[in-house]
Amino acid sequence: MEKFKELSEEKQRPIIEAALKCFGKHGYKKASMSDIAQTSGVSKPMLFHYFGTKRDLYLYLSDYVRNVMIDAYNRNKINAYDDLFERIIMASKMKMGILEKYPHILKFIISMFEETDAAVIDITKKIMPEAQKFSYDLVVKKEDKIKFRDGVDIDVIMRLMFLMAEGYAHEMSDEPCQLDKITEELERIMNMLKSNLYKEEYL
Image 1 (cartoon, rainbow, N blue to C red):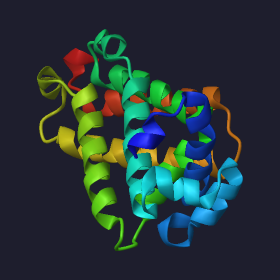
Image 2: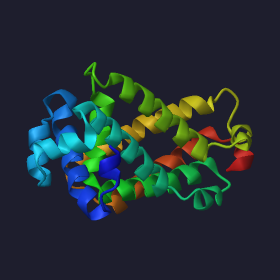
Image 3: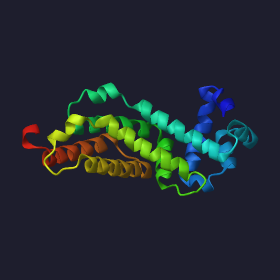
């Protein structure tokens, strides 16, 4: 894998894009190193030279996608908002923007949610909870809890947010969508949740 990292970004890009596309479309088991090599324009032996095994390539991609997503967030901009739901909206805009820009990343992430192959299930079971924890820590602050009405569990609300985000990801990957339309819908949902879940003095 070190040999691959020594390549210029220009030479890395076609290989990464081809691998993301293939794994995202077919899943781990049906994804072919031959197809990835052909799509990327490198030979199959060279692909194995760079990564060693198909599993190592998958592991590299999972780390690559995680780093791209983390880098997409601007924590200072998110922290500029005092309200939880406003921070969620801002973080969601950043996430949807990067997913729209890199559609192959989106399909790969969805395939990771759905992956069942024993060869890589340890990777997905580790990555996905870590991603959710990162998202949680990114937007939730200790002082948020006092704003909610008695009996409202903020962790349940965030679980709902994660499921909603997964649904939007599927929608964005299945057909062309307008980011502005999704953002407007998301803001309406956040305002509705806020008005129903917050104590009156925080509205």
